[in-house]
View 1 (cartoon, rainbow, N blue to C red):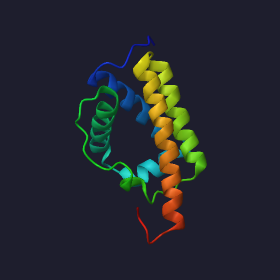
View 2 (spheres, one colour; view 1 turned 30 degrees about the horizontal axis):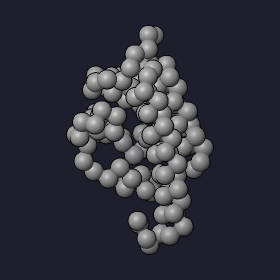
View 3 (cartoon, one colour; view 1 turned 135 degrees about the horizontal axis):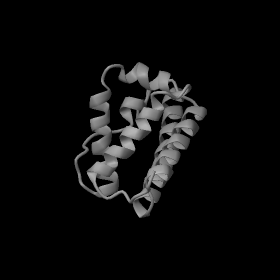
View 4 (cartoon, rainbow, N blue to C red; view 1 turned 180 degrees about the vertical axis):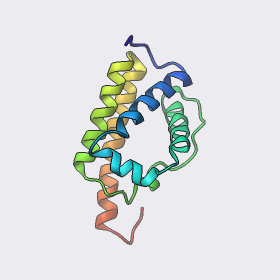
Length: 129
C-alpha cells in the first residue's frame, strides 16, 4: 500500500476505519471494545473521525471529554500497549510525514494519560476526576 500524508478528513477516515477494523479482531482488545460499543460502531467511528480531525487537522469538529467514557473500562497496561502498537502499525503502514508522526506521538501521550487516570479512578473510587 502506498503511503501518503494525513491531509484531509478522508485520510482521517482511512486511518480510523483501518485501525478499528484491527481492534475489532484483536484477541485482547476486541472483547473490551465490543462489550462497550456493542452495535454502536457507526456512531463510535463518527466520533473518532471528529476527534482526530480536531487533533490533527485543527478543524474543530469534536466537542467533548474523551476520558470519561473510558474511566471504568476493565483494562490494564497490556491493553494500552496493544492499543498503541496497533495504532502505530496502522499509521506506519498507511501514512508518512509530519501529521503521521504527530498522530503517533499524540496516541502515545493519550495512552499514557488514560492509563494513569484509570489507575487513579480505581485507587480513588469516590473521586471520579
